[in-house]
Length: 206
Image 1 (cartoon, rainbow, N blue to C red):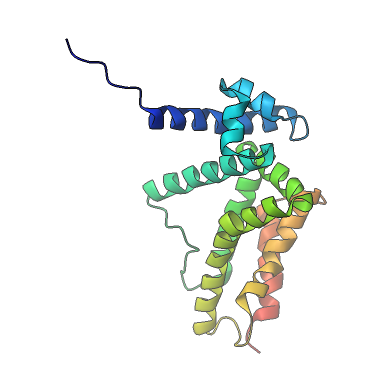
Image 2 (cartoon, rainbow, N blue to C red; image 1 turned 45 degrees about the vertical axis):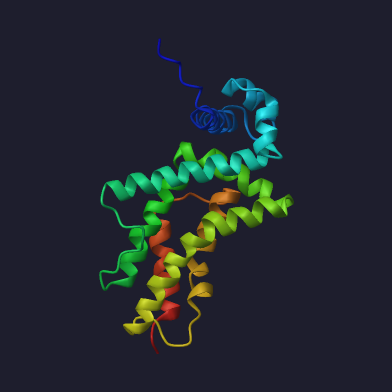
């Protein structure tokens, strides 16, 4: 008689982790971050809250990991579709930046991303640890794509020498983030196109 194999704890843990990620993202979208609790996440995921606390110290840490995983899945899907994880370099800096920022607007307005992104942004204001991890693990790698594209533009003579690309990118990224976070105005492709035009008019060779 064949022996039954022992339960695969690794597989079981991964299944629980995925359920917890899905529960955290769903609850934040449905009831908002303030009303989301570890107990609620555990109940939604079908696990004990001690399982969550074994892996994460707080609901903010759960949500951060869930959002990073969601972003990672989106990046993998893009790669599978043949989309390069980089800002395109067609030789036209303005056109390339406009294309990327239009895609950013679409993502910011996507309900799947918007609720957890806003929750983490708000938590980061009062939670330095979450803010630091969010910036280092997600935001800064994305900003470095802009740095590399602006450096290439400098080499091609589209941006004048001496410009710090890491500061320059904030001329169009920061206003977009502020408008989205504070809901101070509508987000549209026309808006980000204008940001690029204004920024590059100040960066063009003299």
